Length: 129
Image (cartoon, rainbow, N blue to C red; front, side):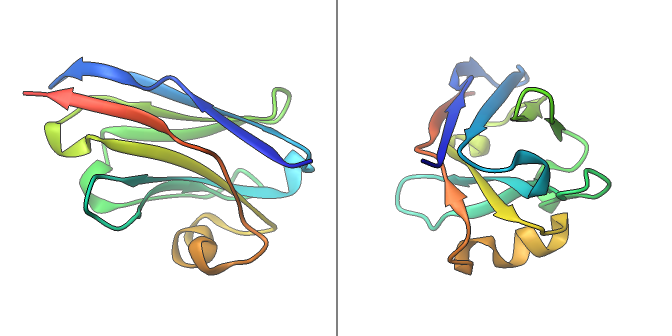
């Protein structure tokens, strides 16, 4: 059974850091492109960051470039999102996703429409000013 479990969210102040983790089970981890999306109340889910299945490519939305870093640990079946210099506008529920054999950019563009994508339940990140 496929399961993606996010953790690491919380309430922080602007300028602080958080590291989100997503443990993936029930999939061949090394074959998965991985990514993070977020959704604030009243808004659509938006792409944040992705890493390709080979681990050689990453892709970020413009507003998080230079602040967020996505990485993967194949030995732990885990994808991370290191978030630095957090801003109030980063407040959202953060979801991780896995899609087989996708590059980072393809993940960003197609994962939400790909029936092969798997999603976690999300972790709340709240940033106060």
